[in-house]
Image (cartoon, rainbow, N blue to C red; front, side, top):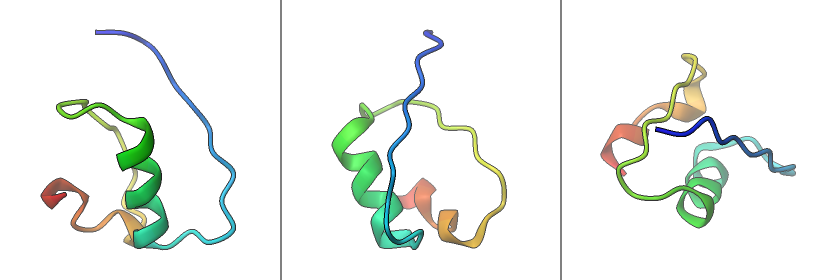
Length: 46
């Protein structure tokens, strides 16, 4: 386990944008801790 973090500036805060940022920057199997913002819905399926 590491304590690495990253920030990405985005123009749109929708589900598609969030998923693309995660696909480009996060390794498979990484645990992501989020709040309940609606754009995060279904991230566990991707």
